[in-house]
Image (cartoon, rainbow, N blue to C red; front, side, top):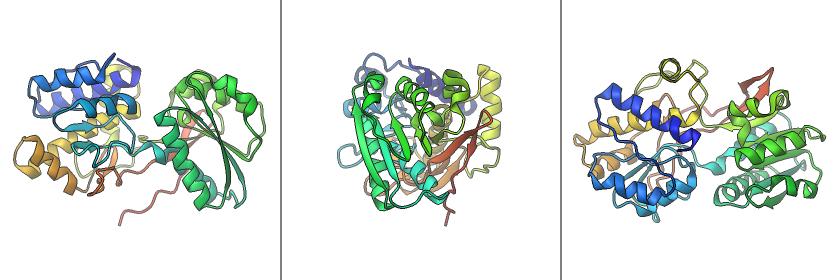
Length: 324
């Protein structure tokens, strides 16, 4: 089980213990499809999906029931192709798009040149496409460079000059790109990996000034309508695991909170009525707002936050829209 997958499993187990729910954890490696079939064989009341967009897609495709997706940040898990998925996270196409919107709000002008480098996978293409759409809308000039998985260093010689460098690779890809970018002149550098604490452990002081998208950050200010707040969750997670909770842990815990609320709304634990309740629900948890598009099922209520590394810490620098 991958690092973030373990964090998510621990958080779901924590939620289950707090609610008196019996939980079985099944490793999605090496086959998410096999894992979901094994999970559904025991006819559980709820199935939570795996971490990662690829495994989440494989699990949803193999499932014969409803999958609560807290680990696959992709807009591809949408209707009509995937009619029985409840999406908790924001889709990945918003990742670098949100970074660009923040940079423009802070003064990046029209006509500025944006270079988007991305791994040639479904995830990388989705993130790059979202950034390109926003770049066009904001009047920015953009170019993209794709690279094969694990070959980011081989691509660096082909990166054109520009004002802003954006990267959507694996964590190791983004580490290599961040190290390279620190030796070149860019007005701003944004990487998917810069949204998580682990990047500082990998590159040290070179993280300073980098921008990154963030699904969740405990800033001690949330007051959710459902479930505990982030401060409580972070404290309990630290006590149990000895580390700060990464965002997949918060997403997984929030999925349990939302499922429990939907059970209450549906007055049953049968999966179809509970899913129907999720399509109508508009609430907040420690992870942020939960609201899905009634047509596609894509998560639209939750907002990607943007952080910049300052003095070795992630600092929120975006301007989130006010909830109406």
